[in-house]
Amino acid sequence: KRIAPGARPLAREVGRRKAAGQKNLGGDKMRLLGWAAFAAMTLFAVPALAAAPAFDLEAATRAWLDTMGPEATERSNRYFEGGYLIDFAGPILSIVISLAMMMFGWAKGVRGWLEKTVKFYFFVALGMALFYQLVSTVLTFPFSYYVDFVREHEFGLAAQEFGPWLAEYLQGSAIGLVIGAIGIALLYLIIRATKQTWWIWGTVFTGAFAAVAIMLAPVYIAPIFNTYTPMEQGPLKESILQMAQANGVPAGDVFVYDRSRQTNSVSANVSGLFETTRVSLSDTLIQRTSPGAVRAVMAHEIGHYSLHHIMSNLLMLLVVIAITFALANLIFNRISRGERWGVRNVWDPAGMPLLFAIISFLGIVSMPINNNIVRFHESQADIFGLNASREPDGFAEA
Image (cartoon, rainbow, N blue to C red; front, side, top):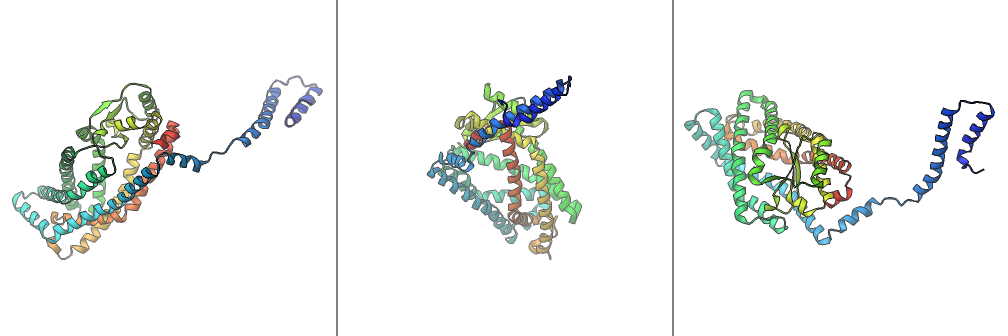
């Protein structure tokens, strides 16, 4: 009578077997006892679970958002909504400048001068790429100054005065000018060699060029703008290294870089490929957030690496680039028909501004696709990071 009702059939079975004279009940007893324990656990656990309060996701989210306050929330919304307009304004400005180069005859004139001076096709394409990028950089400087300096100060994110900011802007522009010109010149060699199928081989070249840039940037480019030092020894560093190594990141150290020189915003990354892979976080992340938030952010970045997002992102974007190049080829041939603006064919360097204006326009059209590719990978990294760090509140804080 003391046995729980759910276990009474099991007790009766034990009694029945004993009455039948069965002696070898060792295994059966263990199984029957297991079922009896399960029945007892169910009787006690189900009412306890039913009494537990349900987790209110909306209330928890609202509680975290309320820690910001209405003023900070409104400022954050203005910053990001204004950023959406900037995403359109930048390419449109680039298109206007490119078309101006074509209509005023600058591209044709520079191409003609280069053909007489340097003669070799690669150097003509290289010189045209340098001219195109230099003019674009100079004419877009007011826009860059507003977006990267004035606006960042208005929203309280910038930490640099104009002098240091300008020095870094010129450094970045010079590096981009050289690397970009070499890349464009090589692309034009491919266009000249493959003619109307250039969009296929141009896509392959773009993927290879991007992979090399991703591999070399952490080692050779990033240290130009920031100083990277090993993270101070302690439980937080050990925790980050354990997460990284447990998830296949070939990192023997964690680096901190002085982002506070430029901004007070927080950031982190697992960058590079193969032997150049580096786990890095900004000093602002350590200064402005809790250890739990640091772990959550680093787990998210480790997720990008462990899920091979560098390669999957690149492969998805290459599909978009292939379609963009194919459409750009068709549109270019249609617009330049009859040697308009002095452009002979698609591999004529004089048509470079026109080709890149078309690519910029198609980039605006494909922007929703590109954004969804990014969002897909970020969502995956979010889930991975939450599972790896077990820091949901740290993630919300960051």
